[in-house]
Image: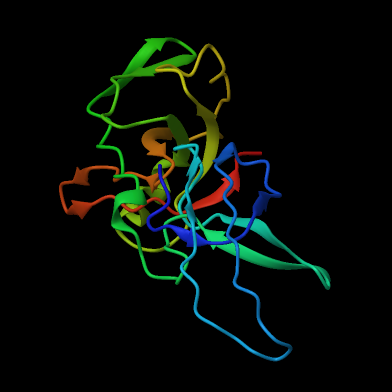
Length: 199
């Protein structure tokens, strides 16, 4: 992902650990008297950010300016998905993954699912049969059982519901842009609102 527009600077240094690749540049200003100002074309620089860094992540830079009379440093924060002026950069945003097309049991304690287009990871949710209607509204309906990059849970689902209860499971695909949709039930699209990690 490349910066959406060149940034003016004598020299910039990245302070972030977010896989930032930066190309430095420098600009020479004309001699100015004290208190005088002038518009000077800046030499641009570009930087790239790892595509897995989510949009909206702030990344800090520092402008290190030097002159005959001294040196000063000022800070700038770039938000992933915006130009330096704060306007949105649509080319940055990662399309959400598609719906997981199928989910089924691979064994007595293991689920497996088909890959979803654009997915980087999968979240598996667990709920009680009494909470199934909540998948159609904003109420809490489940807990998050695990997050994985695999296409199966592994033999981890050994929990047993209380008497007269049934557990259901649902898997959703995610990537740097967020979590994709969960498909539709008979009465409308599913809306997952989990209560956090399953106890």
